[in-house]
Image 1 (tube, rainbow, N blue to C red):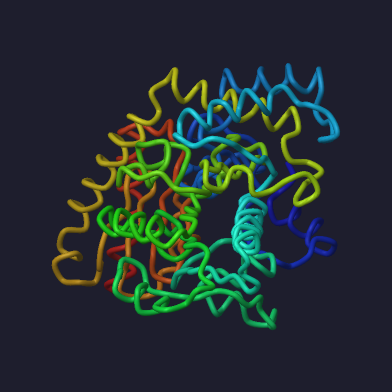
Image 2 (cartoon, rainbow, N blue to C red; image 1 turned 180 degrees about the horizontal axis):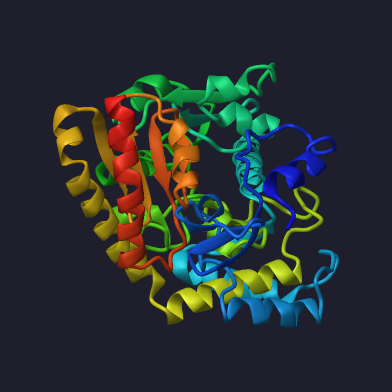
Length: 404
């Protein structure tokens, strides 16, 4: 049998070295488990980084995609695509918003949101629109989304960055007011309801409600990046819904297509008609295969009660982690276990990147973000028993690392 090392050697000379890859090549999956080319099995607590909503080889998603592939995979946006309307209507109903633009990735969705905010400003006569963004944010790696991102490490080497951003700390309404005081050029506030790459940092419900009121009072667009934390991951369709608010603009991607690339920008009445023909577009966005993936993902989520599952299994996983790491939480070597639903961050008092390989060696896939935060974003089909397995593998390794 071909070994993972041989496979890596065969691939690596010709693939750009843009990822710090583990020495693992995955072959296939079933449910919350995947197997590598050598037959080793892993419990998937990463879900393709919050992408594989329905896990792997789902018995209703796969036949639907096969059916669609036999009909029409792609057509361009010169023509109407009926499945776009089907998916858009569903997203509008779930969000309480009004219109949708489809693309293929989270980066594209966020880039579209930034263009939308600038056009909103220009339409009001503001020649140099500015957008409030946040420390530790991550919105993508294009030049504009990189500029909106709050991580100097990944910005380094790509300067000059795009201008027009005002950066503030999360959950500090006074800091936002101070940073924007007397500035007539501010047109929008752009943020993740729960920061993902920045360390699983939630925006507090009270802060979100205050921010909604400020946006209304100052005629700013409230733009919430739900690319990672949306699509049922927290136990509601969108993480901001825990605060009882509705944004003006909401980029989506990752879990929307259960692995098929789908991105979307959902807009409320204030923003729905800013972009007109010729202002924005995409070749692959809204293609029939991607739209079918989105439609079927939502249908299966509703039929199988996956929002409730994300909430209950997520609460179980969080409680089990808190119990298993109680001593470390008490001592401060584990600073916090935070997040909601099946988006959980375990924040350690020291860098923990080594845990990614150590967990993989023991059959568990995780990620580490912001140097010290273990990120768990498994498929929304995960069971309590599988959550227990995560803790059984992870907790001893965390203790070992902290005691080293």
